[in-house]
Image 1 (cartoon, rainbow, N blue to C red):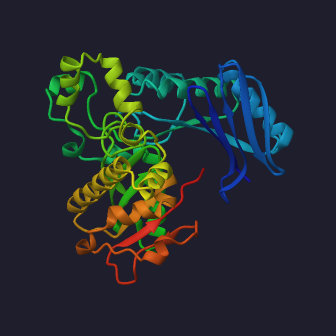
Image 2 (image 1 turned 135 degrees about the horizontal axis):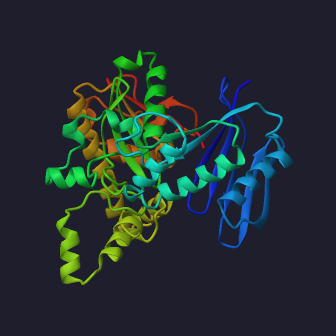
Length: 382
C-alpha cells in the first residue's frame, strides 16, 4: 500500500487528504480554517466519521501540527500508514513548470519569483509547503501546478497582442488555471467513451464559483478561457470575466476609482455578485423563479458567455467528441446546463431532458441517444 498526503494551502486555511494510491481510496481528509485569526477551526473526516474542534492556530506551522493531531486522534494515524510523499497544489507555475515537480530549495525560490503573477495564491501555497517540509522532512514533497496542463497551448493561443519586449520582461501571457481539473476530467471522459485519449477532443466546462473552459485535443490543452490571471474569461461568482480594458481607464478617469478599488471590484464584487447581490447560483435561480429581472439578466449573461466559448472552441477543435461539465454548478445545476446548450443542436449537441435533471451524481451522459456529441457530467474529487 502506498499513501500520499495531499495539501492545498490557502491564506488562512489548509485542506488535506490522505489517499491510498492504488485504489484511490480517501483514508481521511480535513480542513483547517481561520489560521492566524484567533481561534482556529478543525474539521476532520476519518474512519469513524466527521469530527469538529477548535483551538488557536497562529500560523501554517501550527496548521500542519493540527493536521497531524487530527489524523492521529481520529485516524488514520500518520505514523501507521505508509506515506510515501506529500503533494502540494500550487496555483501559478508560470512557464517554468510543465509537470509535477519535486520540491527543493531551488524550486521554492522559483515559486517565490513568480508569485507576482498570483499574489493572492502562491504566497499562501508557499507557507503550506514550508510548514509541511518542516513537519515531514524525511518525505519527498511534490508541487502540482494549476497552470502546467495549459503549457501545451500554441503560441497563437497564449500570446497577447502587446509590445513583445514588455510582455517578455514582465511575463505577460496566458497561463490558464484549473489545469488539474481539466486534465482529470478530460481523461475520464475518454475512458467513459471507451476511446483512446489521443483520439478524443473535449470541451471541458469547470463551473464552480470560479469558472473556466478548456479545449482539449487528444488529451492536450490547446486553449483555455482564464488568462494571465483567473480574471479573464467566463462570468464567475465574483469575477467579471472578459471586459473591454478601456472600461478600467474610463472608470479611473471619470469616476476617480483608484487601481486597487478597480482590482477589488473586478475580482471580488462583479458578475453574479455585482449583478444580483449573491455569488451563489442557487440564489440567482431562485430569484429568476420569482420573476426578478436583474437575476434573469445575470443568468442570461452567464449562459451566453458559456455558449460563446463552446462555439469558439468547437471552431478551434474542428471535431468535438464530448462537452463535459464538472465542479459544483457544472455537476448540479441542470437548468444552467440546459440554458447554455440551448440553440447548439445544429452543432450536434443535444440534451436529454430526463437525463439532465436526474438526481444521479455519478459520472454520466446527459445527451440524447441521437446526439453526435456526447454531453457528460463528471464529478471532481472534493
